[in-house]
Image (cartoon, rainbow, N blue to C red):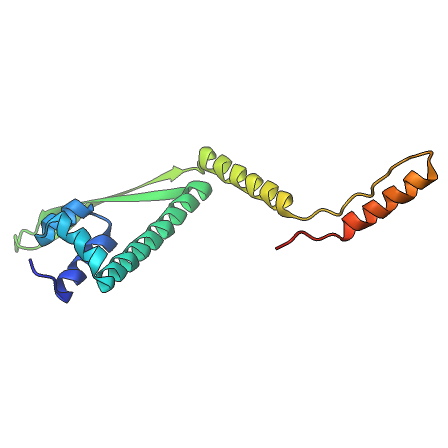
Length: 166
């Protein structure tokens, strides 16, 4: 198959749909994997289209993952409706509803998902605490030699005002 904008659009749609591997995409559009990677490496517009499609796909997957996680954290109710129909006596092409059964099943919050989120939250708090600059504690040096005390105070003052390069 020859490179064209129409072919690129089809490849992009397949990537965004997240249903196929690169090998499967190449089979669907009837190109060789080598051709796919050659186009990606030699055609900047193709590379950009592929990267943007992957970003859109990944963003959509993250949205789905967050929704699924939220349901696991909150719990949810699943409603299932079964309907039975019979053909109408006067017209067998039309069907009449004879029975409808509605079942609801409650799915409670998933404790493993809750624990995972709490652990994640604790890790983030610890990371933030580690990143925060803490107030320097005062240096306490005891000496019986006044000259040594003066020299040490001067050294400490220099260290406190010294800044790292960069």
